[in-house]
Image (cartoon, rainbow, N blue to C red; front, side, top):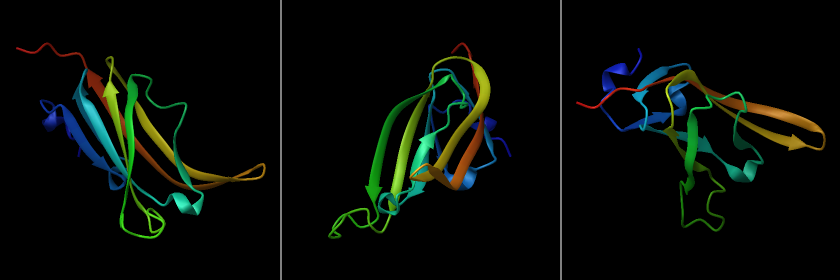
Length: 123
């Protein structure tokens, strides 16, 4: 179900499990996408070039599951990405998790969410 009933919110919190879903937000609204990540595996998340051009990446932060581990992050954690809707439009927020071996790309997971940003006057 689209999360359009959340239109007044300024920050939408999404997870990898929202893959295939859709949201509707106002221009100036933000989307935080939390993705499971294990940097030590060699796999990294990438914003795909065909992602909605009206979404600007504002911040990126990794939080380890166990920050006290000898190598924090070796057991995984959460990559949190915050995007700002800078203009009205409809498109997909496309993230892909992959790693490179020499000249070959090993594709892992992906997360794609349909996003609509509306230019709505505040009353």
